[in-house]
Image (tube, one colour):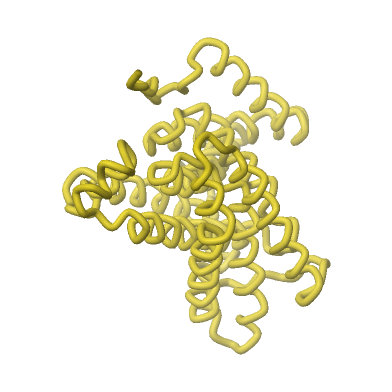
Length: 293
């Protein structure tokens, strides 16, 4: 029983990381109706940058610089990979261009920072810090990740529903052209959403790297896939759906991985994705999109 509880708690923490990544994809999906497949590389850029900047002896400052770096990378991705593709009506070129942007970042990092895994410093909490939960010694980092993900979702939900900026984002999400006619600076709103998405992706990468202990140029790809799966299962565009989807596949992967194998856990999460899409194509908490004819 103790082993199962440990796996469940670890699954909730890992799943909250998936949820956080799904939320970063939602931020850009709302304003551009695109999915940034270069998000994994942006996440990796933050962690690799933090790992190397931390050699100066100030890990928390390195973390802030790493997060800023990922935010700037996302702004660049929007300018050169998404915006040009959206000028062509009905184009899916953004899928290829964002993926190419991510591959380019990964190649640059591999060339100048090395392709080998490097140790990641203790930016938030030490790996030796534990907390007693129901008589179990759980790493404090797991609980910090879970608390941060839930807090982020609540904050974004309030931001979208209770602030002027949230109303602007919802207006852009519903009709970009009409929002522009009413004087809303659509390009600026999109840029801010990409910057915020990059910053949150950077934070997700740092929190994940704290648990793993090492980071390399391929670090973000598997996280991107898991975050995307969490978003689709929960309902793309829904933050609460992202949380449900992330926690669900996180717990499944940890339980199956603990009793069978990690590969079986990943396979089962993908099987769950296919089942959900078969019966609820818009996800567990997502809503079908209405198209005006």
